[in-house]
Image (tube, rainbow, N blue to C red; front, side):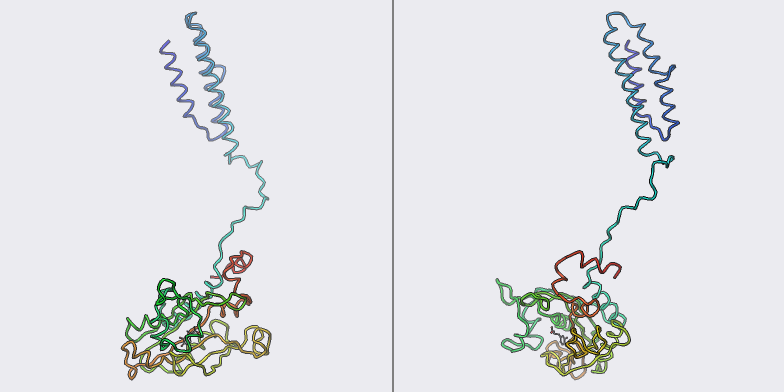
Length: 343
Ligand code: DAH
């Protein structure tokens, strides 16, 4: 009796471990366990040797064993139809595949990456600075002492707990941080986010992005500035793009200028984007103020430099014709999906 029970347990383990890769192997299982000369039949045949008083109990055990083997057989059959790769008849090869929705790069990142790549070819390295800045690096070191009227040009967010700290209003603050710790030659660009206390509309936002450029060395001239920016514009907008400079004022450059490019929409003939002038302003620039250099212990008799700063949103507007600044931060996938494929 004991022997038979042990034997049944051993068979059950064998049955559980049995796997089948194809229909032939499932059939082999059936023959081995459930066939007319199979193991289940054999075990059932032992019934006649069981003493009368144990028959009922054994009958139940043997029957359970039979059901166990049959269920395993059904399971093996089923697993085969689920994974059978040898039969292709029930697969519809013409069904469309599941779409893979690949992410897209944000248009501002696309343009920033292009800008960085262009300036890198001219030898500019990428520099970074903090977005929470102190008054010195954002204003005073840039020749904008307290009460300077030009401070009002940039409505500033101050930190409540300590008004010596503010959200940087321009990436020019990185110029100060670089000159503080680096000696010429300096050739950097700094892409980054800046903040201004503006009412949000299609044309203004409380945060936006700039790329700052700074080049300080011996004999750097306005001609170098002009050629650098001309190269940038031609790489960015194509060989037909033209540039022009207008005199301007920034406390940290002398002389200062603003630069326009020929309108990328109408090519210069006049349209609503360029307000029918044929030109659009893209940046401020100039020769680094000697006082700035001296502020950082760089001898202004020995070294000169140029600097420029431009908004990434503006470049993006001219490249992709985006006409509402709010689109950049609304995360509307219908907007963002249009830049698929751009790097
Ligand atoms: N910081 C200026 C702004 O935010 C832009 C600028 C003008 C940067 C002239 C410069 C510069 O480096 O030389 O409006």
